[in-house]
Length: 144
Image 1: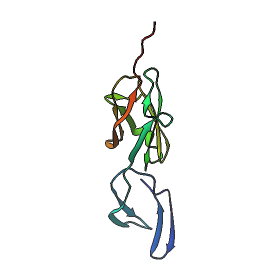
Image 2: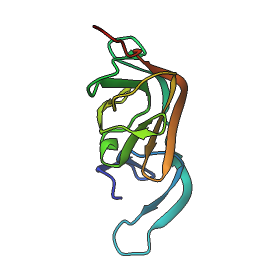
Image 3: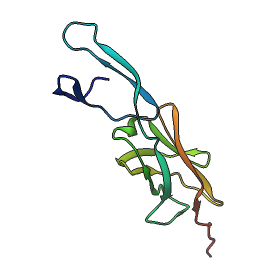
């Protein structure tokens, strides 16, 4: 991926604004004038996203009917993560997952019941993180 912007600070210093990224280190290749330029390997890295909370309006208990809007908070969620992101609640995929900010993802959860469920988020081919026993559903009720 090309730098979003570059400019020379001095004869020996170049500034490159990089695009967002997920996990791991990257190689930097610079071409100035006629090739060949120069290449540095593993010169920059991206912090791994992490999860801290999943719930609806500050509670981790969800209604058993409908598709609740679940907010997953954490850190280092890069812009554009939505295109490759999915969330799971227990063993069931969320209906949708959408990036809101560098600290927040929103997903539409499936209807469910019972015990607590793990929330897991993946982006691309890698795991962003998971929260064990993060969500539970209201118990079904019977009425006359």
